[in-house]
Image 1 (cartoon, rainbow, N blue to C red):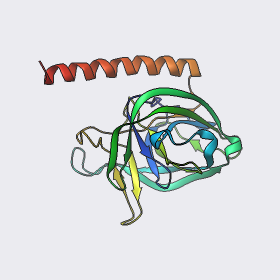
Image 2 (image 1 turned 135 degrees about the vertical axis):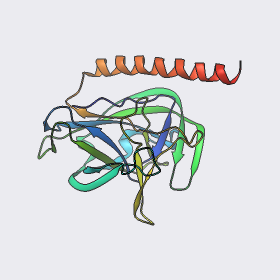
Image 3 (image 1 turned 180 degrees about the vertical axis):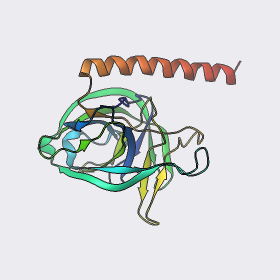
Image 4 (image 1 turned 30 degrees about the horizontal axis):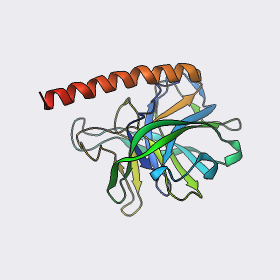
Amino acid sequence: MHYPQLPDPTGWDIRMTGLTVADDWRCSASGPVDGIHFWVSWHGDGGHPTNILNVHLSVHADIPDPDGPGPAYSRPGALLWQRDVAPMMLQYSGPFVGLQGWYDPAINYFAAADHTRYWQINVPVTVDPFVQTMNEIYWLDINLAANSAQPAGWKTSVTNFNDDAVWWDPGPGLWRELRDPLEPSQSLDVAFVIVPEPGTAALGGAAALVLAGVLRHRRRKRARRHP
């Protein structure tokens, strides 16, 4: 029901334990959201999906970017739906492997080579699902509670839709956009799929194709910098 934002195996993981992260999608077909897939890692590989205690999901309306290319950006608006999901309801696959970075925007901490394992988390929504409307833009935000030694992070995506992902800063009470801590001009989106979606094999194949293109682009950038 939207263009899948697939995980970047060598990207960043944005802290989502004790921090709420959100990203937007455009609905391509009206109907209920039957489930949500997202991808996670743990800081320093210090956790596992079996450590998850609760996943809090919410969907918000869109507040569009008010000034186009200016300094403002779109962000979540009115709360439309929310759900707490207990660990026994979750399904997961993995671990998958890639050298990944860790980023905690709340304290501006990042480590470019922090951990190697990540998982796909599937959240089925079988009762009172959110019903989306074609062509509307919505925001999904996730907060994950876990009893792990280290916090969990939401993986960044190899693809980008619309504006950057954002995180909620509770001090001033506002959403802040996410940018690559090493290259601030680069947007960060996070990896998720709204169900129904292509089968797991199709997602894996699409991820491989997109990642191959990203890696080729990175090699070309390095070649331009170091002729």
